Image 1 (cartoon, rainbow, N blue to C red):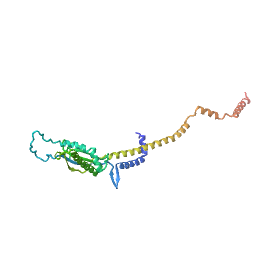
Image 2 (cartoon, rainbow, N blue to C red; image 1 turned 90 degrees about the vertical axis):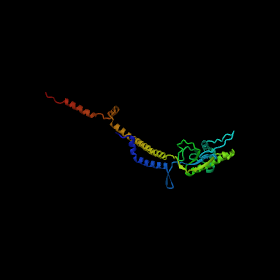
Image 3 (tube, one colour; image 1 turned 90 degrees about the horizontal axis):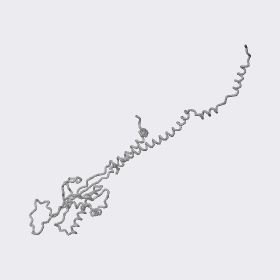
Image 4 (cartoon, one colour; image 1 turned 45 degrees about the vertical axis):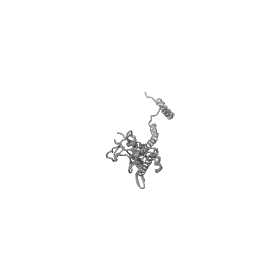
Amino acid sequence: METPKYLQTLWSYKWLLAFGLVVAIAAAFFAGFTITNGQVESRAVKSYTAGTTVLVTSPSDTLYQAQLPAQTVEQGVTPPEPLDLSEAAQIYAYLVAGQTIEDQVVSQVGALDQDTESITAIRRTTQPAGDERFPGSLKLPVLEIVGTAATEDRAEDISAAATDAFLGYVTAEQDADQIPPENRVELEVLARNAAVEGDTSNPAIPIVITGVAVFLAFVALALILGGIRSGREKRRATPRRRGRKAADAPPTEAGAAEASIDAPAPSSEHDDDAERRLVGAGSGPRTD
């Protein structure tokens, strides 16, 4: 089976392709990693999240009571109706992620990078060790205020600033509405969690793309050089073929005519000698 022409071309430039492979490996390495202070670090964009857990409660909370004491109900007065604090926590999550809280956070920690930094909050639906990426079935009056950033310290600062801003915002709103202390919602910070590394960009993607692209560029260069060399060889071989064809071709009618014209005519002296010999032969003595 005959080897394809393009494979023959690539093989003739094998040293160029070997050099291209080395360059592709180097380019892929620097596309995925960087050297900082003598250490190799990945270029993948890292993301860290830090959460602050806040309990939504009230002065009349019965969380630590085994039973509710009996109460005297006055005639014509409805008993107090507690609000569903778990539903309130869900609304508070939207307030934390709103522009008002973000403006206060920016005033404390500086402007947020829109690509890597954010403020959000979620109502917990799982146990403390649960992952809210896979929500549970619980409806808890527990709010988690989350700060996201490219570094651990920055994520923790954003989460802490957002928590303080939200607590102050709620107190200011309660004061503005002149809500009695016994009827106010209370926010209790349960834990300020350390930042944890979240999802990062895949470092293999730029490495593979860069390496393949650089090597294919050298393959294309080898094919282009092979095409140029092949074209030159064809142009050099064309005059030689024409010369051989002209030498091997049979003479044409025009060439034969020219040859007959150029050929020397028979000499008249030879004709005279022949005529004398014939005459002499006829006039000699005869014997009967």
